[in-house]
Image 1 (cartoon, helix red, strand yellow):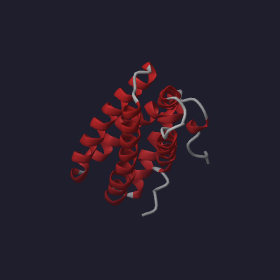
Image 2: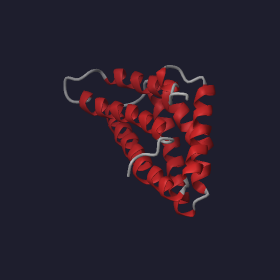
Image 3: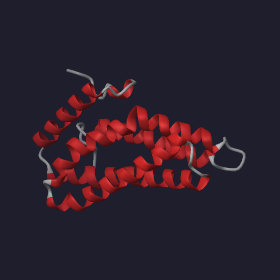
Amino acid sequence: MLRNRNLIPLSHQHQHALALCVRIERGLRPGGPDPKVWQQEIATLFEDEIRYHFEAEEQILFPAAEREASLRQLVDQLRIEHGSLRKSAQAAASGTMTVADLQVFAASLSAHVRKEERELFEGMQEAFSVEELTALGERLDAYFTGSGMPGASCALRPRA
């Protein structure tokens, strides 16, 4: 199913997270950069984008999705995963992750993103009307515009 235009900004942020996962997986091969380099990259991406992304999902997207009974359990799982990923980002920021921790983080973040894309977003697109998705998109846009999130990822959609 094509992604509804109101969810595309979150999907673009998901692409950034998946790219980080691929770089970590490739970079942890023998002879790759020191694990400290990856911890700094995780901490930076989390601070610059992922934390805002999680907040937008938790404040706007998840409450809307929970109104659909078929998505409630999935939203509960996603919230738990956010907590685990936040703890990993804190460990990265403090420089305490091992190579194994980095591998688990990359696999966990990748699986989380794919779950949101394949299950949550698809489920919402099936259950919600175009008008409901448009209203969600407007709320997400307003959140990101006022969030203070640095960089170009804050400019989520061209304004008409």
